[in-house]
Image (cartoon, rainbow, N blue to C red):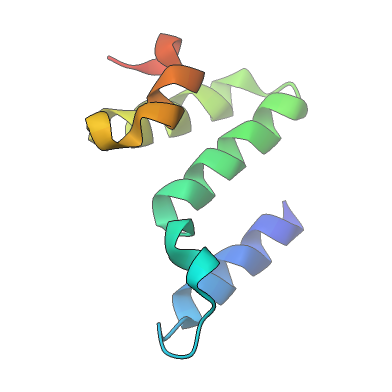
Length: 75
């Protein structure tokens, strides 16, 4: 959880300038999915499910990978 907080802080400090192109997919939604996955590994489903449901409800068909990985969490 400490690592996720550090990642969140780093994400908030990003300027978008001089960043490697592979960072295009790292955003607040992806971090939320990572947080939910961490809670899943910690066997804390009551924390994981709302996070996944929230982010997946905002995704459209362009996020096919995520929607396919977590079909049970879409409203």
